[in-house]
Every structure is written in C-alpha cells, then in structure tokens.
Length: 412
Image 1: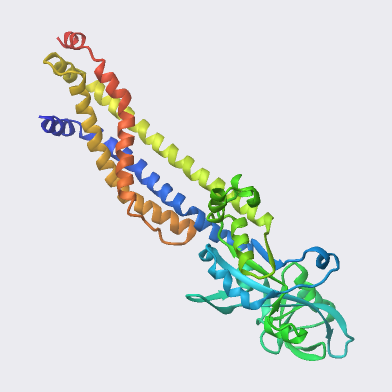
Image 2: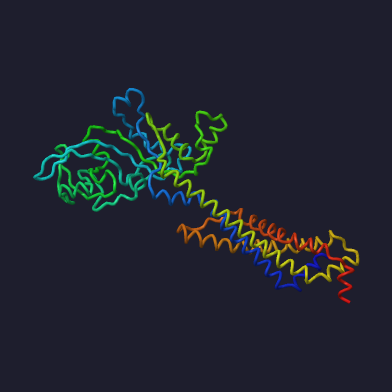
C-alpha cells in the first residue's frame, strides 16, 4: 500500500520531486567537494606554503661556558639521513646543510679581501633508510636567484653585491685562501649570501679542514597548525599529554624529534613562517567548514519550501486519509518515506556530481587530481537523507495539523 502511494505521489508531482532531488544533489555534491578538500587541505596547502622556505633550523647546542666564551661547535654531516628516521619522517620535504667560514678572496690583479664563504648542497641525492632523498637549497630556499650554473668541484658562486663591487663575472677565476676556483655564476638572495661566496659543501669542508662538519641545517616540514595545547611546555605535561604532543605534527614536536637524532644539537622553529602557516591553514579550514554548512543550509531551505508547497497542494488528500482512519503516524510515515527516497536519490546523484566538482576545484586551485575516498558515497547518501529529513520537519508538522472537517467542508 505504501509503495503504491509513493509511486502515485512521485508520478503526480514529478516537477516538485525533481526540484527536491536536484536541491539535495547540489547540496550533497558541494558538501562532498568541500569535505574532500577539508580532509586534504592541510597537506595540500602546507605543501604549497613550503615554497616559502624552511620552518625549522638545527644548530649546535651551546651551553654554559662554551656559550659565554664563544666557542664553536659543529653538527655532523653523517647525522643528516637520520632526519628521515623520525616519527614524522614523511613530513620532512626539504633539507639543506650549511657550513660557514671566513676566507681570503683574491681576484686577478686585485688585493686579498676577507669574505664569508658558505658551503651547502644545491641538489644532492642523499641515501636514507628505504631509498634516497633529494636534499639541497632548492628545497628550503627556492627564492635563491642563480645566474649561471650551480657550484661544483673547483667552482663557486659569488654573491651579486660582492661581484658588482669587485667587478667579478661568470667565467673568471678567483682564489680562496690561495686555492683557485672558477666563478660558475652569480647569486642573488636579498640576504647575507649577496656579500658572500658559495661553494659545494664538500669543497668548503676541504678548504677549511672541517671534513664532515656543519654549522647548521635548515629543514622544511609539513606541520599541523599550532593550537593552545601546542604551546604548552613539554616538561610540564603528563605522560599522556606528552604522547599526544609528540605524535602530533606540530612544528615544535617535529623540531624536538630532529633534535633527538642530531647529536649535540638544538632544533628550533622559525616562528614567523610557522605561525603564518598555521594561521593560513586554520582560516582556510574554517572557511571550508563554513561554506559546507551554508551549502547544506541552502539545500534544507530548498527542500522545505518545495515540501511545504507539496503539503499545501495535498491538503485534501491528507484530510481524506485522516477521515477514513489514518492517524498521525500513518501520515508522517508517507512523507518521511518520500523524504527518504528523495534523500537517497539526491545523495547518489550528489556523489557523482561531487566527484566532478572536487576534481575541478583540485585542478583549478592545487593543479592536482582529486583523490575521492570510498567513504564519500555513504557520506553523500547520509547527507542527502539528513538534508531531506531536516527540510521536511516543518512541512510534516503542518500536514499533521490538517483538520479533515474544515478542509473537506471547504471542498464541497
């Protein structure tokens, strides 16, 4: 009996039912797209923000008299692969070692000049457990502007400001501490590198007699936005709190884990970049959830308006059912069954449209292909049913208040 009533109802109200299905489908589709992005947005946006450079610096630990006396300490190059062994190893997307020292620069026909020398990797394959990892400046400082070729064996880069002052150009030969090098290119960064010479790390280690030693390491890591709990002092945490903090991808917890694998080190976040990244991610996530809520609210209003119009048109039908013995449960069951069917149809259609919408947004914003999860189908069906039921509450209450005597008398 219920099936026949539903069949006739859908057949007699094809336009209204179609409008409700479309409203539910549109809401479910956009909600699915927004939720998919919400799940992936932290990782996607965090990867985009990593283009702004490193967010963690690892330096030698100086304490007590060593710090006061200005003694130099070093990190060990052999510890670099250990960065990819920490709990959050997959979040380490960039790494570059640096060595600093003072050398005497001599140009052809010029006098010697004391300048800063920087040794680093530009694009270096590093063996790590389970494979290899491309480390180097391009992963932590992509804004370095290079004119010419990166430095290699027997060659170096000269900072743009230093080269202009001394009249150095690519192809020239200069000497560092009496050892001759070819100028492979010029470097412009807007920082201290503009007044320095930059060599391949092993070349500067050999020149300074500091084989296997480093001054600092810059790390670029995907992180979870900092919240109030993240700023809590780990020393004051309970065991359970510490485990939660340690196993969350905060920039502070990743820095702590890096400090544990680099011997004699102190790892600290570069707060300006880390805090800015956290604010961007939090605001984007909040925006996505707000848009999802607005989309679903719009769908509920659309269903409510269409269902209310349906109830108004069917007052005589409702009054007749009540007059022949149908109670409130019977009437409500009919409209709830209609809402369930509309919700399932709209949810199924919304899932298909949601894939298209998600893929379009992912390509337009992130230039990547969407990754649809299996959970989206049941989620879209659930959203469709809940949206339709929520939109049907007021119309059903109105249907239950129909007074058969009044409505049927008016029909006579």
